[in-house]
Image 1: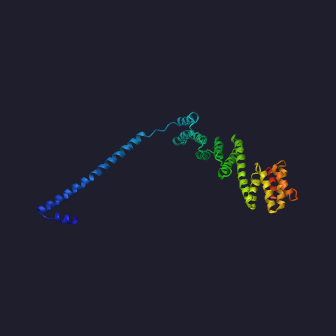
Image 2: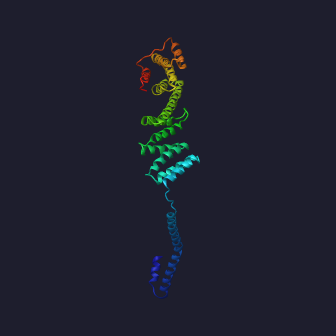
Image 3: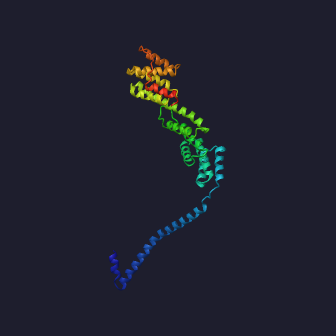
Length: 306
């Protein structure tokens, strides 16, 4: 088609005039078709320019750090809106990252998130505080908030205890790094509760294994309680279950040692009465082997190594 137009345009007279006129008309038609698109593009360009100018004019100026901080306190204490308060404290850090207000606002945001049960946000903010301000007087509290957040999320014994273990780890950091802080005592109490739960989990699994006659697996679970969680209320039962398991396997000496250690450390325990009766039913008496791992574990406890 393009070849035909070129050929006609090279003629003379009326034919050439008509050909040029046809080309001109076609060009005008193409321009007419393109005009709406050009106009649309122009409108978009103008609109974008206008929006850009509008955005620049409407960007909110930075607010004073103390004003943002006090607004956060108002939301937290008066309005009881912990999450909104946390966001306001975070705004202090965003707008004034190098100010003293930012440091104060960061620990307050962690506290506000904790109050609002937003535990993951609390942990994140508190960890950031400990990283940025390890020597601050509030670092102990930030570390305590991490442990408390995990502690408050501890599940029932039948479920996975990962958060319980994390609670113990975080709270032990409080005791280790900040032993003289006001939070160390509370951390120790929470650790005892969390460790008792971990021991309870081991006992729960151990009983199931014992009932299914998986004696080796059961011994390993009860051993964890005896060696790692001796200060919990579950250790007495663990010693009885070890006596039962060893007797079921016919390993009499270990059963006698387990019963003897139970009687020596918890003479009034109802679990000892059961262990003693079990050993005696075979015509035996509880006898402790001082070289057995059970005996050695309690020797460490008595010496203060555990």
